[in-house]
Image 1 (cartoon, rainbow, N blue to C red):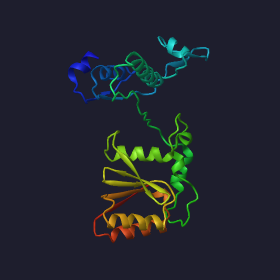
Image 2 (image 1 turned 45 degrees about the vertical axis):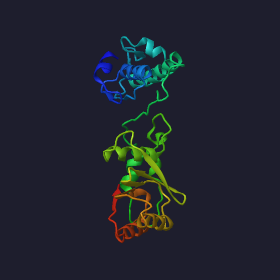
Image 3 (image 1 turned 120 degrees about the horizontal axis):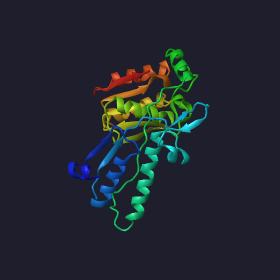
Image 4 (image 1 turned 135 degrees about the vertical axis):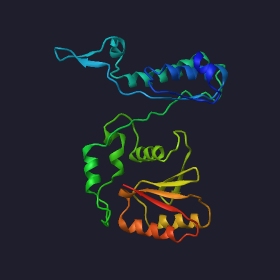
Length: 253
């Protein structure tokens, strides 16, 4: 806490590559509660197990981890996240009357996860020249399909992955843009992401109209190729090429 106080500015971003039980996040929130600053944090922690099998084949806690094991934890990252939740709750309780209005105390949890075998097989078998799409490829990247805790939809996973790939920060503002009943995502008046299925001729006409009349300003349209059949792609591609303003179409598979 002293280290952060002496070395950080009021709106600093504090990163801890070895978060452990997230003492750094706790310290950042305590300081924000005290001086009203807007420091943020990124905690990085591998899912290191605090359990192992003994010589009898029984799962037991590693040395020094009995208290955490008895509390229901099985890996260090679980302890890290729970520490942030409990610390934020305690800070709110202890500073109920003086807590700054901008105190947040929440966090987003990002995982690095490999797709399951079935999703990889669907990707390998995909034929972009098919007229019809038979498999919803987006669903393969949901928390449920990836078999991890959480309630992230496949669209959330793909969008988050692409934002990181494209160099955007975790707190980048993402705006939902409606084209009929289809929801796209615009980032910094720069890129438009089309991920889900359901894009058709009506959506293409509406997009071209908004771009042509400058209601919408983007430099590129990025789409999840598995959600578009060949006819939809060609129509969108041809329409963008006819615009006076240059808008690049990026297809990702």
